[in-house]
Image (cartoon, rainbow, N blue to C red; front, top):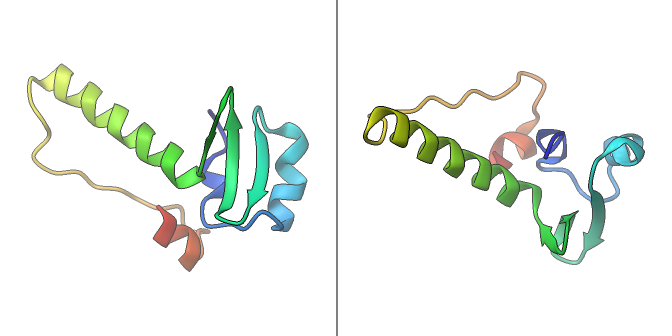
Length: 88
């Protein structure tokens, strides 16, 4: 899954989504609960996809190091607005 970070904190009617839509490798639905990404038979919120990616990264690091990391630093792109930062 790529381009998910561009969708974090955005609404289904956001102009960024309209511009990205044709280039995305997945479908996007606007629902009463917010934006949903259509991945195969499942629908995911962009925040849930990001959480799953972070969980997989944590699992991979734990396996490689023989245990969980002592600490983690998460950086946010400077162009992220308050809603996007909060979603992440």
